[in-house]
Image 1 (cartoon, one colour):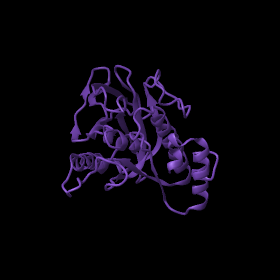
Image 2 (cartoon, helix red, strand yellow):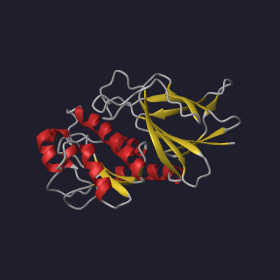
Image 3 (cartoon, one colour):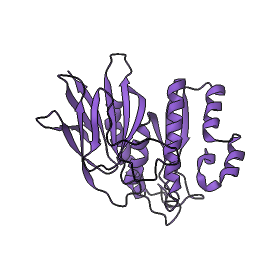
Image 4 (tube, helix red, strand yellow):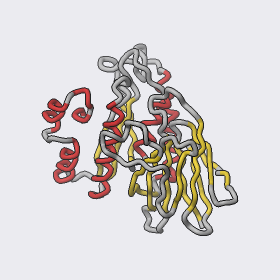
Length: 277
């Protein structure tokens, strides 16, 4: 969907999509294509100086996720590994793409890894040897798999944003931001210093009534000022205890006397939170 990339211009986007907006294009896909998924890309790292690209990504995923929920479709996402020569890329920028999209319900994560001829900085060097990006893909895939073992037992029903006031990332899609996220089963989810979180709200696929959250610290999409922050939450189910899976395995959150739980998250990292009674 090159028509969603803002550097092509609105008129060219219309000619590529055949519709006036990207949302209209996805709606037409839902009406006419009998597949159980919608596949999309959003290479906002290709032009890091164009700050609108990330705002487009937020808008596009919000619109697609809503339509996929309404139509019973899954999301397949392709992330960017290569880059134009001399433009910076990092493993944390790849993490952002993967775990950001999972907060909207991505079920299949793919990576766009081209050979020479288009983008530079390939996964494989000209002599066929593996570049550092080959190991980046392996690292992020391992982290995705660790969380996916629990994540895939659930399906996404909503996506929330906390701590985005003062940023421009939600403006293009007129997306709402709150100080914290409460779903009923989970309450007061936030970074203690008020920095941005994306929160995917999920329910068990087996109909058992289980609920979960994928919480992603989205404060540093371009890997410019990575930090470690504290994320806190409460459980809205009496007598329940949290089960948390991080990108490297199980995490034990810190419990306070007032019922608040907390855990440490680094920029571009995620935690999957379930509860048991």
